[in-house]
Length: 395
Image (cartoon, rainbow, N blue to C red; front, side):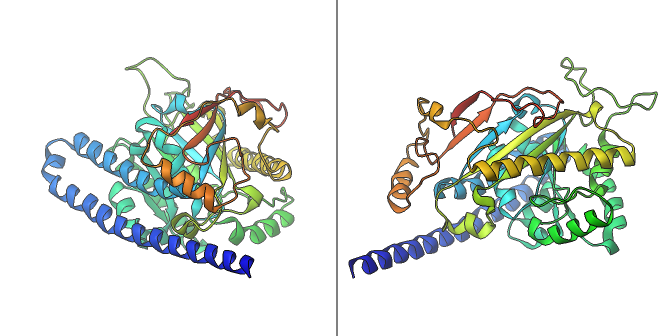
């Protein structure tokens, strides 16, 4: 009887907390999003006087809105560990980020990851499914200049033309730096069977944790934004001195998102917070644009190889259940991790008393990032496993 009452009490507490979180999210959106739109309407005179200043202000407010979404996960105890190459080093350069797509929570995870990447979060362009246009955040993305892609063979060619026009119209004029792209063209659960069938027919790699990427959007982005020299070759993606940095894409960021037990988070989980606190892992690889082929066949092979590597990374992660490189996490227990915001600290104790958090028990379950200082080697990481030096950050 006591056990039943205790279980009932936990369920009631969870439902009450979910209701309170949902109410807070609704109020949060009803205040923040109209405020964003109204401020930009009021600032229209600035747009005509100084377009650069106007889009700078818009970028600041856009980052605040993304931080708002990220905070929903932080408060619920959903944290991120980042591995691989240090993408902080290229936040002033132009880049396209290629990400595997498992669920709607991928976008929220990236919003959390990118908050500490300098000004780049203000100057990024998202490419997402057109259905997001009709969500509460759709009007923000529309104003910011993100691109909504309609899926399906009937729309494919038209969408690529529209994407090229969109990049030419908005990427430069709004001083964009990074583009976020999900090359698979849909969620893993929806595309896996089709992708595997296509792979069997065409003697391509059989993938389980990712799907074969689609070339179209990636190729349009590269052809439109990669700087070309007079002889037609791609200019170097290496960093150059201030004042001489060429305009155009300089890097491709290969990002792999991995969830514990291969159970991706959706937006409902992010909003309601009904899952136990968990740690999502994100692994980065950096490729200078000069190392990325531009010809269709070579680019297709290169892109397929990136997703084969993602498959291997994720397979290893799900087998070990903890990390990409079998790091001894006990070595991190000496790190001094604290929450910088004392107002959030009470939420942590509430979460710890509610859930039995067995994930990284020696780490602070809120506002913790493990970031790696990896090299920019273009050699395959799986051919030469490394042991990246980790450092802890409080957000």
